Each structure stands twice: as structure tokens, then as C-alpha cells.
Image 1: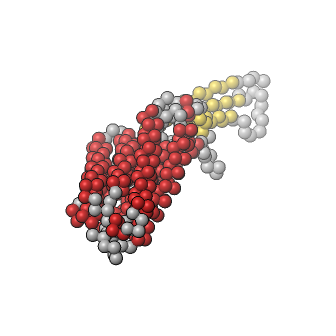
Image 2: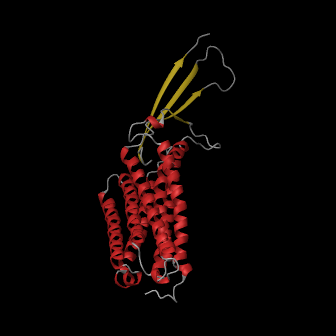
Length: 349
């Protein structure tokens, strides 16, 4: 049990205060991200819009519980070092709300993997099972913390539940990131204009996965090495913010990715891409319904010939059909068809 002479204020209450301040700052970032989403993507499916609203609500409630926890330690029991071992219900609830938010974000990315793998349940089901298991262990941890009301007793009896929850979360992050990068890489097509978009998606998947994995692993290491202070909890406050931000950032970068398909290397001789339809007016599941690429070649080079020689005009048209998931910017199919029409007009002298 925490003894008054042994309590290290900077590593207990100080760690909670630092983590709470950072978490509150991230709540502002998430609020701005949510506002930008609803302002820019009014045509998204209702399920995605509700998901964003629920994630924002969970994040707001999480910040509220963090604030109540700080009030408990810094105001209600100011100067009472014997209360550091006590776990208020608000502090325990932050673990449950982090787990719920993490579960939603994991399910979102598992759904993307399911679509990229062309409906392979053998990949999606184990990932979803791991996400649900992580949620169960977090709920068990929350329940036992509220029931025992002592961090020291919880550490001796249910140390494994919190450890397994963090371990499952970090493992799932690694598996999801690896799966996304693998299936996105396999979606490349040498003749596809979406390769640049796929490269950006791979980068986003890796960055988001690396950030959440690192935060979870660092929190778990602090919990295993220093279970009798609250540094691990201060870091745990921030984990849910990283997950919420990864989801919102993924949704809000779609307009940037849409613009990426129109870019070409100035030093290359690639066919210019013309987007023939407005993205925002596309039906669900077909953002890039038509990406038209047109090349017109006229045989006008060289010296002018005799009027008796025929002049040849060759028109070559190439149309690329692309299907991309509107809600998640996932390339699903790329079909190419080349139609060549040759018209010859002869002029006699």
C-alpha cells in the first residue's frame, strides 16, 4: 500500500496532471477534426457520420472523467497522500472509455482489411475477436478497480487483466497495420493511376499504427516496471486520443488523396488524368467512377507534302474505370479498356 512517507508526488499526482493536460489538449484537436469532417464530407454514409459523432462523444466523456479524477486528487483530497492508493470511480471509468473507443477504431480498420482482402473472413474474424477480447479485459479492470478501490490490492490480484488488455491492444495494432500495408501494396497495378494514392494510404496506415502501438507499449512497460506509481495512468490518458485522431485523420485526408490522383511527374510523359465527374456527387461505393485519360496524336510533323499525299489523323482514346470505396478511400477494382478509332481523310490535288 502507498505509505505517506513513500509517496512520490511528481510520479503519482504529478503524472496524472501532466497526462490530463495533454489529453485535454488533444480533445481540442479531435473536436476540430470532427468539425472539419462534418463540414467537408456531408455526403458520407450515415453510419460513418454516426461513428464520428460517437467517437467524439466518447472522447469528450473520457476527458470529463480525467478532469473529475484530477479534481479528486488535487482538490477534494489536497495534501492527503494516503488517498493516492485510492482509485476513484472516475479514474477507473477512463480505462473503460478508452477501451470502447479503441474497440470502435479497431473495428473500423478491421472492416477496411475485410474489404481489401475481398471478403476473407479468416482474416477479419480473428482480428475482431482480439479487439473484443481487449474490450472485455479492460471492462474487467474497470470493474475490479471500482470494487477494490485500491491500486495496491488490484496490482496483487488482477495485475494480469490490465497487462493483457494493453498487450492485446498493441498486438492488434501491429497486425492491423501490417495487414493494411500488405493488402494495399498488393492493390498496385503497373498501369493504374491510383498507385500514388495507394502509396499515401500505406504511409498513413504505418504512421497511425506506429503511433498508437508506441503509446500502448510505453504505457504497458511503465505499468510492468512501476506499478506502484501513476505514470502508466498518465500515459494511458493519451492513448484514446491517439486512436480517435487516427480515425478522424484517415477520414479527413480523403480530399487530399483525391487530388493526388490528378498529379503527374513533370519529367514524365504520362497521359494527363482528367477527372470527368464531381467526387462529392458520386453514389456510395464509387467516388472515382470515371478517370478519363485521352491522348490525341496528329501526324503533323515533318515538311509539308504534296497535296496528292493523304493526311492521316489518328485519335487514340483510353478510359480507365476505377472503383473506390467512398467512405474509406479503399481501392477495390481497376479496369482498363482501350478503344482506338482511326479516321482517314484524303484530299486530292
